[in-house]
Image (tube, helix red, strand yellow):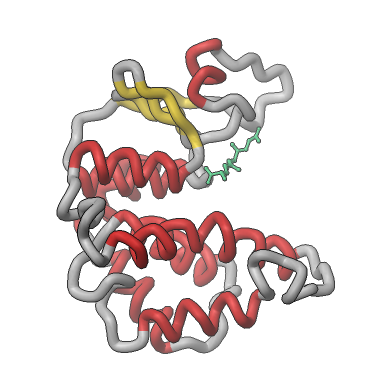
Length: 196
Ligand SMILES: N[C@@H](CCC(=O)N[C@@H](CS)C(=O)NCC(=O)O)C(=O)O
Protein backbone atom coordinates (compact mmCIF):
# COMPACT_ATOMS: atom_id res chain seq x y z
CA UNK A 1 0.00 0.00 0.00
CA UNK A 2 1.36 3.42 -0.90
CA UNK A 3 0.32 6.86 0.28
CA UNK A 4 1.21 9.92 -1.75
CA UNK A 5 1.80 12.72 0.70
CA UNK A 6 3.35 16.11 1.40
CA UNK A 7 4.30 17.69 4.72
CA UNK A 8 1.91 20.08 6.49
CA UNK A 9 -1.11 18.98 4.51
CA UNK A 10 -4.18 16.83 4.98
CA UNK A 11 -1.84 13.88 4.34
CA UNK A 12 -1.18 13.76 8.09
CA UNK A 13 -4.71 12.60 8.80
CA UNK A 14 -4.37 9.75 6.27
CA UNK A 15 -1.11 8.70 7.94
CA UNK A 16 -2.83 8.87 11.33
CA UNK A 17 -5.59 6.62 9.91
CA UNK A 18 -3.04 4.15 8.50
CA UNK A 19 -1.43 4.00 11.94
CA UNK A 20 -4.81 3.48 13.63
CA UNK A 21 -5.58 0.65 11.19
CA UNK A 22 -2.17 -0.93 11.83
CA UNK A 23 -1.51 -1.69 8.17
CA UNK A 24 1.89 -1.65 6.48
CA UNK A 25 2.42 1.20 4.05
CA UNK A 26 5.06 3.12 2.18
CA UNK A 27 5.10 6.84 1.52
CA UNK A 28 5.84 8.68 -1.70
CA UNK A 29 6.46 12.37 -1.43
CA UNK A 30 4.71 14.68 -3.90
CA UNK A 31 6.37 18.06 -4.10
CA UNK A 32 3.12 20.01 -4.32
CA UNK A 33 4.94 23.31 -3.86
CA UNK A 34 7.42 22.86 -6.74
CA UNK A 35 7.06 25.37 -9.59
CA UNK A 36 8.05 22.79 -12.21
CA UNK A 37 5.92 20.05 -10.75
CA UNK A 38 5.34 16.98 -12.90
CA UNK A 39 3.03 14.38 -11.40
CA UNK A 40 3.46 10.69 -12.15
CA UNK A 41 0.66 8.90 -13.99
CA UNK A 42 0.32 6.60 -10.98
CA UNK A 43 -0.34 9.53 -8.67
CA UNK A 44 -2.79 11.17 -11.08
CA UNK A 45 -4.69 7.88 -11.43
CA UNK A 46 -5.33 8.02 -7.68
CA UNK A 47 -5.77 11.78 -7.54
CA UNK A 48 -7.21 13.28 -10.73
CA UNK A 49 -6.93 16.78 -9.23
CA UNK A 50 -3.32 16.25 -8.21
CA UNK A 51 -4.06 16.65 -4.51
CA UNK A 52 -2.64 14.80 -1.56
CA UNK A 53 -3.31 12.55 0.22
CA UNK A 54 -3.84 9.79 -2.33
CA UNK A 55 -3.68 6.04 -1.78
CA UNK A 56 -2.89 3.03 -3.91
CA UNK A 57 -3.71 -0.40 -2.51
CA UNK A 58 -3.45 -3.11 -5.15
CA UNK A 59 -6.08 -2.24 -7.73
CA UNK A 60 -7.67 0.41 -5.52
CA UNK A 61 -6.60 3.99 -6.19
CA UNK A 62 -8.26 6.95 -4.52
CA UNK A 63 -7.87 10.38 -3.03
CA UNK A 64 -10.00 12.62 -0.78
CA UNK A 65 -8.98 12.12 2.83
CA UNK A 66 -12.48 11.13 4.00
CA UNK A 67 -12.73 8.53 1.24
CA UNK A 68 -9.29 7.19 2.19
CA UNK A 69 -10.28 6.97 5.88
CA UNK A 70 -13.53 5.20 5.01
CA UNK A 71 -11.76 2.82 2.60
CA UNK A 72 -9.14 1.86 5.18
CA UNK A 73 -11.66 1.47 7.98
CA UNK A 74 -14.04 -0.70 5.94
CA UNK A 75 -11.31 -2.75 4.32
CA UNK A 76 -8.99 -3.29 7.27
CA UNK A 77 -10.82 -2.40 10.48
CA UNK A 78 -14.52 -3.01 9.90
CA UNK A 79 -16.35 -3.29 13.19
CA UNK A 80 -13.73 -1.27 15.02
CA UNK A 81 -12.72 1.90 13.12
CA UNK A 82 -16.00 1.77 11.14
CA UNK A 83 -19.32 0.36 12.32
CA UNK A 84 -20.48 -2.47 10.04
CA UNK A 85 -23.08 -1.56 7.41
CA UNK A 86 -25.91 -3.11 9.44
CA UNK A 87 -24.87 -1.47 12.70
CA UNK A 88 -27.25 1.32 13.84
CA UNK A 89 -24.15 3.46 14.46
CA UNK A 90 -23.33 3.33 10.74
CA UNK A 91 -25.63 6.27 9.95
CA UNK A 92 -24.15 8.71 12.50
CA UNK A 93 -20.71 7.40 11.57
CA UNK A 94 -21.23 8.42 7.93
CA UNK A 95 -22.70 11.78 8.90
CA UNK A 96 -19.80 12.68 11.20
CA UNK A 97 -17.17 11.25 8.85
CA UNK A 98 -18.43 13.61 6.15
CA UNK A 99 -18.87 16.56 8.50
CA UNK A 100 -15.22 17.60 8.04
CA UNK A 101 -15.12 17.93 4.22
CA UNK A 102 -18.77 18.95 3.84
CA UNK A 103 -19.16 21.37 6.75
CA UNK A 104 -16.00 22.07 8.78
CA UNK A 105 -13.61 22.84 5.92
CA UNK A 106 -15.93 25.04 3.81
CA UNK A 107 -16.95 26.94 6.97
CA UNK A 108 -13.28 27.47 7.90
CA UNK A 109 -12.51 28.68 4.38
CA UNK A 110 -15.40 31.16 4.45
CA UNK A 111 -14.36 32.36 7.92
CA UNK A 112 -10.67 32.79 7.04
CA UNK A 113 -11.46 34.56 3.78
CA UNK A 114 -13.94 36.83 5.54
CA UNK A 115 -16.73 35.92 3.17
CA UNK A 116 -20.15 36.96 4.47
CA UNK A 117 -21.93 33.77 5.51
CA UNK A 118 -25.21 32.79 3.87
CA UNK A 119 -26.27 30.09 6.33
CA UNK A 120 -29.40 29.00 4.54
CA UNK A 121 -27.83 28.89 1.10
CA UNK A 122 -24.57 27.22 2.12
CA UNK A 123 -24.49 23.52 2.85
CA UNK A 124 -22.12 24.22 5.73
CA UNK A 125 -24.31 26.83 7.43
CA UNK A 126 -21.71 29.13 8.93
CA UNK A 127 -18.63 28.90 11.13
CA UNK A 128 -20.37 29.43 14.48
CA UNK A 129 -23.15 26.95 13.72
CA UNK A 130 -20.57 24.43 12.52
CA UNK A 131 -18.71 24.70 15.84
CA UNK A 132 -21.86 24.68 17.97
CA UNK A 133 -23.33 21.62 16.21
CA UNK A 134 -20.07 19.70 16.63
CA UNK A 135 -19.80 20.65 20.32
CA UNK A 136 -23.40 19.62 20.97
CA UNK A 137 -22.81 16.25 19.36
CA UNK A 138 -19.70 15.61 21.45
CA UNK A 139 -21.37 16.72 24.68
CA UNK A 140 -20.13 14.20 27.26
CA UNK A 141 -19.13 11.65 24.62
CA UNK A 142 -15.51 10.61 24.55
CA UNK A 143 -15.59 10.14 20.77
CA UNK A 144 -18.14 11.28 18.26
CA UNK A 145 -19.97 7.92 18.33
CA UNK A 146 -19.56 7.43 22.07
CA UNK A 147 -17.04 5.09 23.63
CA UNK A 148 -15.55 3.75 20.41
CA UNK A 149 -12.97 5.69 18.44
CA UNK A 150 -13.62 5.51 14.68
CA UNK A 151 -12.39 6.94 11.39
CA UNK A 152 -14.88 9.80 11.91
CA UNK A 153 -12.69 10.89 14.84
CA UNK A 154 -9.62 10.89 12.62
CA UNK A 155 -11.36 13.36 10.34
CA UNK A 156 -12.86 15.49 13.11
CA UNK A 157 -9.85 15.19 15.40
CA UNK A 158 -7.46 16.40 12.72
CA UNK A 159 -9.80 19.36 12.16
CA UNK A 160 -9.92 20.19 15.88
CA UNK A 161 -6.12 20.03 16.10
CA UNK A 162 -5.82 22.22 12.99
CA UNK A 163 -8.27 24.81 14.34
CA UNK A 164 -6.39 24.98 17.61
CA UNK A 165 -3.00 25.21 15.91
CA UNK A 166 -4.16 28.25 13.95
CA UNK A 167 -5.93 29.89 16.87
CA UNK A 168 -9.37 29.40 15.41
CA UNK A 169 -10.84 27.17 18.08
CA UNK A 170 -13.30 29.32 20.00
CA UNK A 171 -13.24 29.03 23.79
CA UNK A 172 -14.65 25.53 23.94
CA UNK A 173 -13.73 23.20 26.75
CA UNK A 174 -15.44 20.37 24.85
CA UNK A 175 -13.43 20.75 21.65
CA UNK A 176 -10.19 21.50 23.54
CA UNK A 177 -10.57 18.27 25.51
CA UNK A 178 -11.47 16.38 22.34
CA UNK A 179 -8.33 17.68 20.58
CA UNK A 180 -6.28 16.63 23.62
CA UNK A 181 -7.76 13.12 23.59
CA UNK A 182 -6.99 12.76 19.88
CA UNK A 183 -3.41 13.96 20.33
CA UNK A 184 -2.91 11.53 23.21
CA UNK A 185 -3.51 8.51 20.96
CA UNK A 186 -0.39 6.52 20.19
CA UNK A 187 -1.29 6.31 16.48
CA UNK A 188 -1.51 10.12 16.37
CA UNK A 189 1.99 10.38 17.89
CA UNK A 190 3.36 7.84 15.43
CA UNK A 191 1.88 9.82 12.53
CA UNK A 192 3.48 13.00 13.90
CA UNK A 193 6.85 11.24 13.95
CA UNK A 194 6.39 10.05 10.36
CA UNK A 195 5.67 13.54 9.01
CA UNK A 196 8.43 15.27 10.99
N1 LIG B 1 -10.70 17.48 -0.07
C1 LIG B 1 -9.35 17.01 -0.19
C2 LIG B 1 -8.41 18.19 -0.16
C3 LIG B 1 -7.01 17.82 -0.57
C4 LIG B 1 -6.13 19.05 -0.66
O1 LIG B 1 -6.58 20.18 -0.78
N2 LIG B 1 -4.82 18.82 -0.66
C5 LIG B 1 -3.88 19.91 -0.76
C6 LIG B 1 -2.92 19.86 0.43
S1 LIG B 1 -3.79 19.91 1.98
C7 LIG B 1 -3.06 19.76 -2.03
O2 LIG B 1 -2.75 18.67 -2.42
N3 LIG B 1 -2.72 20.89 -2.67
C8 LIG B 1 -1.84 20.88 -3.81
C9 LIG B 1 -2.53 21.14 -5.11
O3 LIG B 1 -3.75 21.38 -5.12
O4 LIG B 1 -1.85 21.10 -6.13
C10 LIG B 1 -9.03 16.01 0.94
O5 LIG B 1 -9.67 16.08 1.99
O6 LIG B 1 -8.16 15.16 0.74
